[in-house]
Length: 494
Image (tube, rainbow, N blue to C red; front, side, top):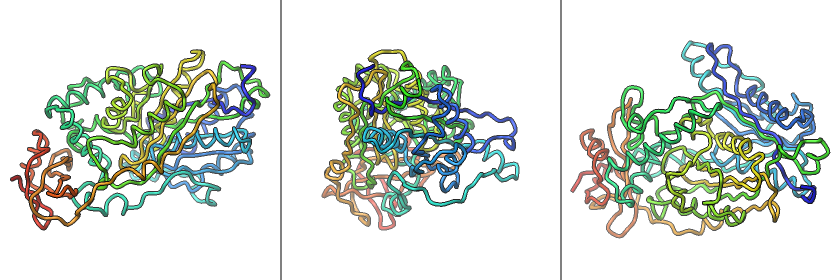
């Protein structure tokens, strides 16, 4: 690789940490797990001195209350580094990589450390035992910079959909899932079998992944069947079909320039290059989406990433489609023309590999870096989703350098220009069901949040609060059914 330009960004070290502390009081907190991961990533590169040389440190904001974890880590490493905090979103890590690659390519940075982690499993066990999880330097000065878009409660709950009961990520994605099921022409049973088999494949990948949180491989039937250990969350999702953030996991990677990697003597066999990154990090209301049976911005982002990298998606050796829930995996595969039978995760996904809040993608990148080393021209495609299925990012990686250099695009303006649906939040009268989520309490299906179309096409929302009616929503395809919405938002089938 002697002809690779000096300022080409390259990933030279990665690491993943899985903590399984028998005694939660002895567990290391999230910040210390991040430190462990960064030290291990520097060792992976064969250049521990990278930590002190860092001039940028980017850390994912998590479930903890650390104000500026990057500054704390810089002090630990003896580095004079810009501190960056990524706001909560599944897209944050891919945004970090793009930000670092552009800064290194432009000569503004030389060594950027990226890390994130959670210790939520041990923290919850500590609280259940009456203790308080430890925190190192929760307070401190604000970070030098933040990356991402902040969502407020008004963006999520204080809207017509939220007032109808759509107040959790699982419920949000279940709405899309129901609309997709109807568009695919699948029965409720056939659709549940489809997504459960997809997740059973993920579980088999996790069983072979030493960094995965859940190493057993439940069958599709076990995943689909609700029970005490696998309760309903929001139909069609049981617990084994949703992201699992109650984990003790951390991951890290180190990005530098080809020139610095050569100067430090880091073997080229350790190098993996970011080829392209595309993002559209936009807060978009569910009610205003033109359709609930697809997600056009996701298709735009993943297709554009492949175009910038000159990659035929079917030629990608490795794929990791963001798997907080089955809906985005199916829509990503559909947008790229990739069959669901392919391996669509390298980790086992956010359920079985583990979903440490907005840090999952760092585990996916670390895994593809390990797998791509020594594999010549093979490449990997990784996708990311954040918010209420609102924010999207995708990255292409390869062991060989990109022929045209690192490519980046922010397509947020294109997403903002997409058509929107009119909303009638206080509509009462005749309507047609468009999509819905059946909500659970303590594992029991109790009510439904229902998206409807009023006669002139505007979207409105209603509730089905009767448990027997909720069961019908869970086991029948009621999309397209005629209903009447009362003034109190309650729905009655016509």
